Amino acid sequence: MSLLELQRVAKRYRDGQLDRVVLREVSLRIGAGELAVVWGLRGCGRSTLLRVAAGIEAPDEGIVLFEGRDLAHNREGVLGAGIGYCQKHLGSGSQMVLDVVMVALLAAGISPSQARVRASEGLERARVASCATLRISALNTAEAIRVALARVLALEPRLLVVDDPVQGVDLLERDGILALLRSLANDGLAVLASASEATGLSGADRTLALSAGELRGPPPAELAPVVALRRASARQVGA
Amino acid sequence: MGAERDAQAGPMHSQVNWALLGLVIERPSYAYELARRFERTYDGVLTLSSVSHVYTALAALRERALVEELPGTRIGRQPKPHYRATPRGVEDYGEWLVGQVDEDLRRQRLFVLALATYTRDPRAALEILTRYEQACLAEAARTPIKPREEVCVGDPQALAARLLAEEGRLALGAKLAWVEYARQELHVLADVRMVAG
Image 1 (cartoon, chains in turn cyan, yellow):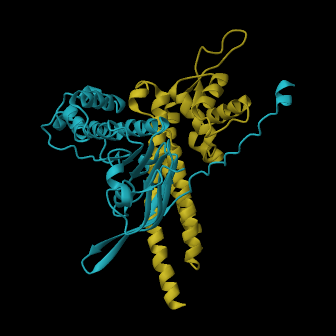
Image 2 (tube, each protein chain N blue to C red):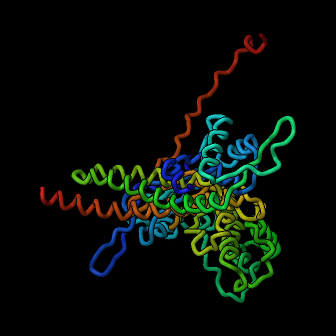
Image 3 (cartoon, chains in turn brown, cyan):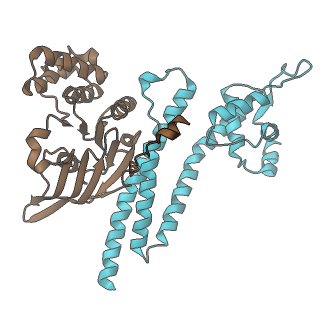
């Protein structure tokens, strides 16, 4: 079963007198351990697609299923538990990195001591543990995106959604971010990312293109049906 | 004399010859060592038919005065003459490298002109574009990730791999953006055809 499934999703925005269609009949499936990247130029609907996939915005048409549950009915229960949407803005520059990562955990009702441990683990996983005691304003772009990822990872999601993770990151630091996303998928996390440049596609299991609200790309690999092996008879086992 | 010889020889088209010249520029080597270095460096990009291919290429490079034998290396019972690049070889190699831009542009023009033959049937052209886009996306996904912290900074092969990956990704990015532009043009053309026809 797919972890995330979008079925014929449409999304429109009111633009003055006009209805602007941002997503048209978008269907998409992502499984655990898969890194899928949606490529598209600015204004193509990438960010909207990711927000809809993460359950932050509801589609106007179609269904978004997470672990088989319709997000339209279970949004509160799913967000914060199973789906981690990476919010790149880290807040006030005077805050300390560890505190920023802890906030989401405390909001989820986790005790301060446990939140500290999990926040540290998240920073470690994002390979930015050395920044724990820095202020947000002291981070470079690559470190900031790693901290943003750590904040989500600390919540232990099963699906990570991240919009254009290498945008604005120094050219020489981009592969480090991509390697992190790849390793998260290798660890079993489903990752849905977007990219406005081809660099952001490296290492993806599946790449899709979004233009004028239409998503194009190969379908996910079909899993072979599970066929039960015939049980060997006692005589065969004994032979 | 040199110019006369050039006129007779004409431009050197063999990419293997140019690639070998590059390796000789990197450091003087003898033929067998060059063959090994060639295989390591150009694996999957260029191939040698055999080690003797290197001898043929070196003869061609010497004929054009792009490489020369390193004095004092043809010694012993099994001499291994080393070859080094001449100043002219270094200069011509640089020009050949820059000339690759023209070659890339020529290939891209060929694709665009070939696609333009579909203008009578914009829907078919759009279908081709989509397949081209998918090929570019798949190629970009296959580009290896090489985080800086995981490679040795001083390793020339690692640097070459990183430069190659980035060149490929940037080129693919330009192609993908062009596909989007071409798609919009073809949609307009398809709409015009539909209204007219």
